[in-house]
Image (cartoon, rainbow, N blue to C red; front, top):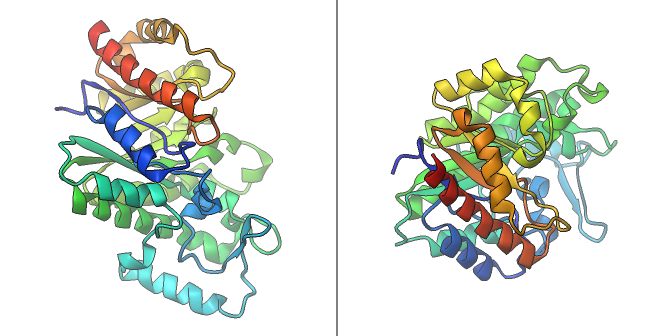
Length: 339
C-alpha cells in the first residue's frame, strides 16, 4: 500500500471518551484499514490537555492542580538544576528523559498495549509544535516562554526529543510505517503584534528542528493548523503533509497556488480536515458536500490525500465524534472511487 496516490482517513488527536480502552478500540475498529492514531483524552484528566501532555521534564514546570493551571517558574530553587538536566538529556539524546507517562497520555499507553499483533500498514502519533508550545506556556510573570531568551532556545529540541521517544515506542510494538503530526494551532496568530519580533525564518527553523528529528526516525512529518494562517510558512518547512481545516479554509490555501502546486509536485500530501468538528452541524448528507469539494479541487487531489475531522474532537459528544470518524472513512473510500 502506497501512502501516496491513495486516500486514507485518520484523526487529529483528541477524543471525548472517558474510557481509554473503548477509545482505542473504536479507533482501531474504525480506521484499521486506514491510519489509526493514539487518542488524547482531555475529558479524562487535566494532564491530557495538549500543552500539558508534553510538559514532563521541561525545566521549571509548576502545576497548580486545584486551579487547573500550569506555568514555568524560572525563579524556583531547582530551576537551574532542572534546566541543566534537560539540556544534558537533549545534547546526549537520553530519550528516556522525554518519556510521557500514563498519567499524561492514557490513550498513548493503551494504544501501545493494543496494537501489537495488529496488521496495520500505518499508524499516527502527534506532538505539540514549538510555536504553539512556546506561546501557550507562560512563565511566572504570565509571559509566553517563547519570548524567554534561555527557554526559547530549547523548546524545539525538547519537543523533537519527545517526538523521537514516541516514535521509538510506536516502532517497538508495531512494524507499521509512522505518520507524525506537529500540532501548531498558534500559527493563526502569525502576522499579529504578538509575533512582531519574530522573523519568518525563525519560525520555520524552529518547526524544521522537530521535522528533522521525525525524518531521522524515518517517519513522515506533517503540520496541523486548524485555522487560517500565512500558509507560505508551512510550505517553507520540510514537511511531507499539510493538515488544515478544509471545511473553512480551502479557498484561503488556494491563494498560495504556486507554493501549493510545488508542494504537491514534490510529493507533498494534503490532509483535508473536511468534516467539521462543530456539534451543531448536521452531518446528514455530508458525503455529497465532500464530493463537491473533491470535484472542485480534483487536480490537487488526484494523487491522493488524508481525510480528517477539521480539528480535534475532544470537546464534542462521543456520539458526534464517532459519526465524524465514520464519515472520514466513508469520504476517503468515496474519493478513491471518484478518482
